[in-house]
Length: 154
Image (cartoon, rainbow, N blue to C red; front, side, top):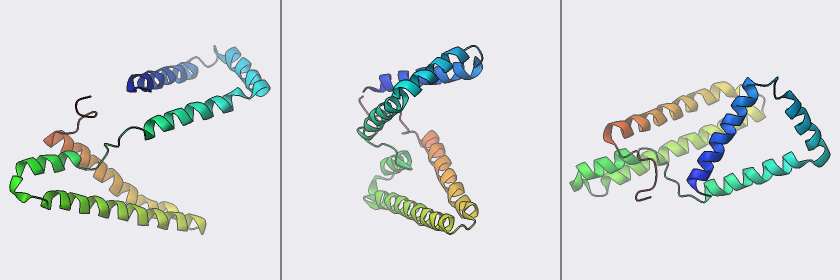
């Protein structure tokens, strides 16, 4: 599937859901018919499964370009050419520490939830840090550039 097909499908779904919410009473006969049809043929479950699997396969088949601070690393490597491998090493260590912290925090939160403890307080700090790092990445991309919208040349 191409990106335009995914974008069009997402946009169409959003328009349909918005129309269904806004004009719920006017579309009630359609929803009643759809409910009877689904009870008889069980088509919605199969349809949702197939469409979900298709979108999942499409998302997993594209390259991942979502590295934290990739634009800042590229900019610093270009600005400080004499640094050699020090800048990528620093950024890789920071990304590794961040992922390690999130992984350990996730294990602690799951363990607390399994033991019926207060897991929300344990999850609050990692979520704040995740949001802060994400906002820092967005701001760094806005300041130094390099936060492109896709693969170069495509």
